[in-house]
Amino acid sequence: MKGLAEFVMRGRLQALLVIVAGAGSLLFCWISAAALALVTLRKGAGSGAWLFMWALLPAGTLLYAFGDSGPLALLAGTMVLALVLRATVNLPLAVLAGVGVGVATGLAMLAFSTAYLDQLVTYFAEFLASMEQQLSKGGQAVELPRPGATQIAGMLGAGTAMMSVLCLLLARYWQAALYNPGGFGVEFKALYYPATVSSVLVVAAVVLYGLGMQYRTWAMICLIPLTFAGLALVHTRIGLSGRGKGWLTWFYIAWLLFDPVKLLVVFFAIADSWLKFRQRWSRGPGTQVSQRDERDDRDDRDI
Image (cartoon, rainbow, N blue to C red; front, side, top):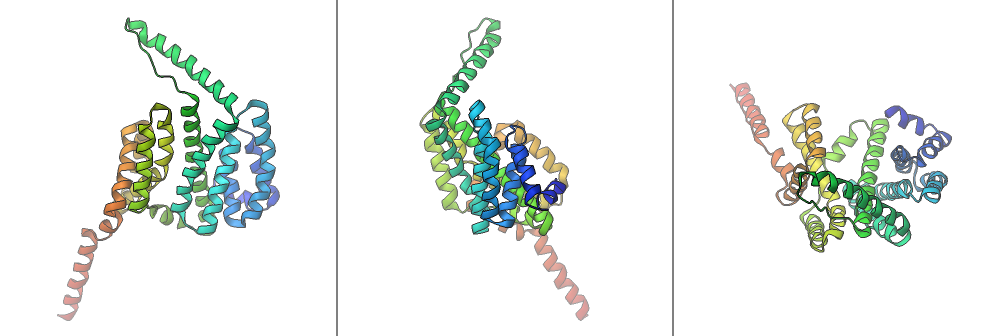
């Protein structure tokens, strides 16, 4: 992946080739979004905007031909986050801006893509009907809830926000790998939200969740910044404990497969906002032992 980043940064033509090639693909639009963010972070808003205008051609064609706005939304969302990060040099604020990206995407879907949402509603209804038939073979009727257009729009908004943040982090990793080795790890592990911000996000998520099934996917958008803050906390703890990458690998497998692990990560981020675990860990037993050893060494030298 570092080789791809080096190719993108060789010149405007190389960046244009990578971004345009992936912008019209459902499978590879994330590469285009990350490359666009990399150029924006390194070269500025002007270079990023020029590449974004070219990327609109394949992404817009996909939207016009099939009604799928996914690649276009991902490119625009990642571009916005990259502009925020370049302007503020504040990764937590850029990740927090992902909430705005998710909400804007969901509202845009409701306003301009009603036909596409209706297709998805029909698809989910047919899929769930077939699932009900399979589950009802034992003799007991099973009825699964059908998602509506509002719920699906929130789901697409949450997905776009999540992917936009991931593409931004990938671009930041590329930038650090090329120009500041090791810098991304330090920056990501410091990702943290104060108690005021985390409280607002939690309250917004709880209110949306309480409005009913149709708005529960919108509540997920509010928890995205806390998710990444929790992941950063896990990275910090594993790094301080001296455990290898194998622990992170198993953790991410569990995080992807089990919803309780996802909720636990969010809970850790909320708790960290109030308890400041990183400061406690930095003053842990290891630090005290080191200070005691230094005092013992000085005493030995005095003798």
